[in-house]
Image (cartoon, rainbow, N blue to C red; front, side, top):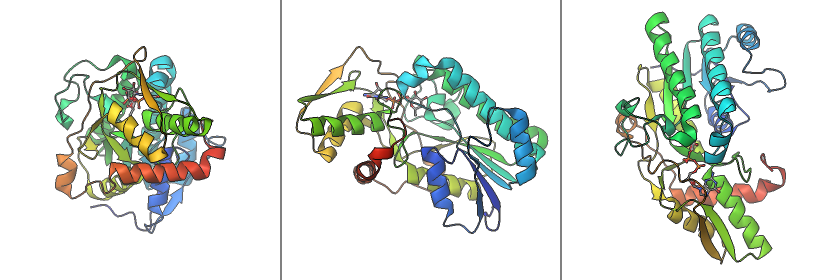
Length: 315
Ligand code: GFB
């Protein structure tokens, strides 16, 4: 439906885990990838974004730029998560309209759905109930992003779409001990515990919440697929369709890292959403499904971590 061939393609947020993966995936397309450093363009400043887009004239845009973090970061930095994400989305979307961008894909998150949505969560579950409190600020910003894409499509005929991925992990992740998501936090904690000869590793919460994990290169592949094959007002879920408890997930990481000690649950830390499994049948019916198993994805993740942990973000 839309070919990236020969196009000028801006990956906004190319230094983040998802943006890096999209840029890697685009190496296989015959297109010109545009990126801009944060020191040269602050995406929260509207005039700067519009000027940069007017000069660079991208034809397609992947909006992978966002202020992201795990359950603790979301809960403790509410203004940053709401303001930065709203500003980034509205500046890029309005800039794209002004610069006559042909196609735009906005990335969101499965936390847009109500806390108690029935599982697996279909796209239509959006705005049918209250949000999980630990990530409501980020969720509201991402819901606004979806609505902006819909509104621009209706009012201006812009070909702007949005994709809602489940929890993502992979090369380029942020390994901050407090602010990261659970895969990075646990990979690092088990690795350091093994090296220190510690007896146990602490996992936040009860271990009972269920999460679905998607390898970031699969997400990047889905984004390129959707950019080329999807053009609807409704946002679309991106996941594997399978989930695992945090307790089992921690045990899998312990095994991959080779840590012989115990796992201890710190129930003073929040569990967050009890379960958020995405219904991925809409994406599957278009012909895309995730290719990386959790086990092989986590093995590749640890291999990458071992090679890069000297210069990691979040250290
Ligand atoms: O990955 P995570 O922070 O994000 O936490 P959410 C997932 C689950 O892992 C929660 C537990 O039940 C955590 O309590 N967990 C266990 C840990 N140990 C740890 C740890 O050391 N660090 C972290 N971070 N969690 C986020 C949202 O929610 O998901 C964002 O806050 C975004 O908005 C993202 O949507 C994908 O899945 O709970």
